[in-house]
Image (cartoon, rainbow, N blue to C red; front, side, top):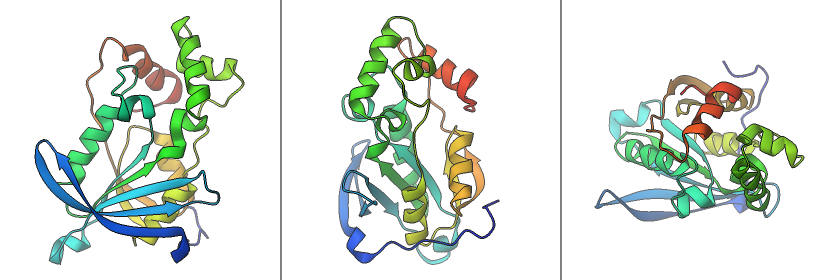
Length: 211
C-alpha cells in the first residue's frame, strides 16, 4: 500500500506539454496522447504515452510501464540488455489495453549513472565483472534511479492506482512510497540471449528481480 500521509503532487502547467503522436507498432499506425514533462532541472525530463479508455473502459485501473531510458538498447538495439525487448513488449500491451500508459525516463540511463559511466561499467563487464560489481568499481551506486517524477506524472494523469509492468520489486516500493498504489504486478517476459544471459542472471540473483 502507498505510504501514509503522502500528498499527490500536481505538476505546474509550465512543466508539461502535450500533443498527439502517431507511432508504428508491428506495421500498424496508432495515435497516442503524448505528454512531455520537465523535472526539477533541465536534465530531468520525461515523456508519457497514453492510450485512453472510453466509456466504461475509462474506469479501469491503468496498465503502466515506467521505462528507464537506454540509448544502447532502445535506440541501437544492443543485445547486452533486455531494455529494447521490454520496451517493445510494453508498447504492444499498452496500445491494446484501455488506459495503457508508458512513462519514459531518459535520465535513468545506465540505472541513473548516465551514458558515459555506463560505458565505463560495460568495459569492466568485458573483463568479467557483473553489472553490480562494475558499478561499485567505478564508484557509482548499484542503482541510482529516482521515481519521484514518474509518480508526479501518474498523479498528473489522475492515476493513483495502477497495474505496473515490471520485474523489479524496488520500482514498486519506490512508487508506493511516492503515493502510487500498485494493485498488481504484471511481469515483463523476455527471452534471454547469448549476450544478456549473465546480465539477466545478475538482476535475478543480486537485485531480486522477478525473472
